[in-house]
Image (tube, rainbow, N blue to C red; front, side, top):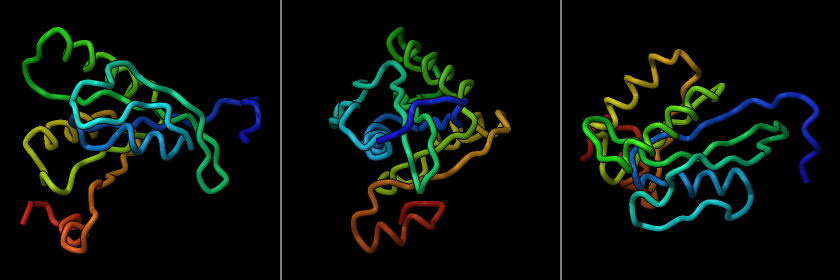
Length: 143
């Protein structure tokens, strides 16, 4: 059980394209099923916050909707706005990608935007369920 917050905890936002596993990772950090996880894009629209602890360090974790660069409709614009707010609130950012899809043009645009924040940025590669996928996580292109 986490202690009550008496000081400001570091804030870590999870950012990436739709359906790369952001909510699953959020639930793992939070230690409970707070975020909805399903194969349909667009389920996470608002930011989702929880306290987390990893290796004895307490922090606040933020789940975000899938960030899509380029022109968007009203719903995607609202999701992008929520993700942008999470990035602004964060002390550090996890950029989550999907090894099965490889790096996409959207991933490159997102990481360029995240780099401009000059906040600590961590790359996490998801969906490495086989030995081949694990190996592909170290490649800059899909095999």
